[in-house]
Length: 507
Image (cartoon, rainbow, N blue to C red; front, side):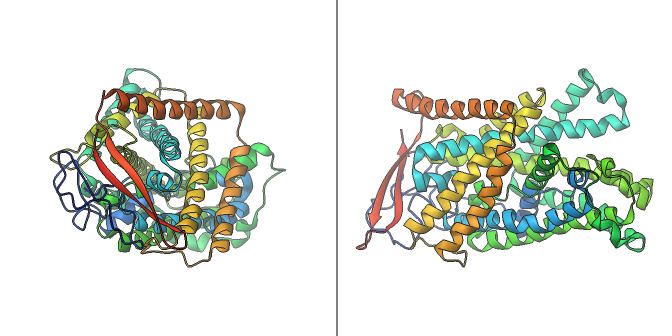
């Protein structure tokens, strides 16, 4: 297990504590950001073991964090027509996905341990902003994850209508899916990673068939169709939100950086591979269906790609696409639950949450209490009417991304000599522009929200403040055990801050 520990580690489970917080190479990551287990990191929860994610599984984990396939891209066509939908999926990766992925690659390789963006913000701005970042991203993750068992139940209702209405059958299906998928997650990232490879292969294959069969039927002029009628505010909102949430969450996998083999080499390659697969996965069925079929714009509701597959190829491919949608939901759930669980583990290692959330299974090496808690929250949200709740969770994710971009710029400016195995090849003014463009779009998407979304988001943010100060009271009273994290700053002769060491013990 890779954890964030300093030059001195005390308490049970540590495998060694070298000297004090004296000398540190200013070009290396802060001592608080230990390298992955098996290199030079200390451990607190379990014996040293081999990291679980290699390049190929990591590519597919990122793919499911971000996309899971073209399922869900249909509303972009419904809102804006084929031309704007195609332009959106061609251009949006350059103004949003690539900047987010580049920031993730640089910071995940500079701080190669669990916790990801929580660590970056804590290193830049301190524990309170780090805790708020964790609160926003975690709530966004577990709430969004509640949609996937519900989606599986919805598809099951097409086979048997008894699952389509409220009652015991539907509730039992949601509970069963949630518990079964969470148990799979408990078995470890090795299992989950290779399961993601298999799930993606089955979920994406029907669109390869659809694209090939559609080729002789394509009329390029159909790609140029503009919106049928004037687009209102709700249409633009649907269009931009569809693009945003289908090409987002590149940073989620950073919370598991401590589980990745050679993260400094693996992360940039995995992000590139997942990026190519995601873009191709969206564009092939979009070009095929819009070019081969002459259907009204309003027909492009959620799930229309299955109908398109049936019209282009046959009923058997429609069924395959529907099965693929369920398998995609499984992959999305597994990837998101892994992100949430390892984020809690990282926050516990940082002393922001109790140490018990960093406890790992002796069988599988997974943070089982973090998985259990995340599953319980997801299950509770599954039975709510959660359209506004999910929209609010996405709003919180947007707040977190603004804070993440700010932390990236702060760390690049204030810690120029921090060892960055992957470094975005741009000077600081260029980095500001790179972050301002997606931030501006992010603010636009957030500003077209509704008052219920703002109210729920404010309430969940207040909850995060209560959790932070509540943890302080619990720590002071000694009711639970926390990692003790003490920081120190080092400056060179020119006054530049090059890093922060951490001394981790038990409180």
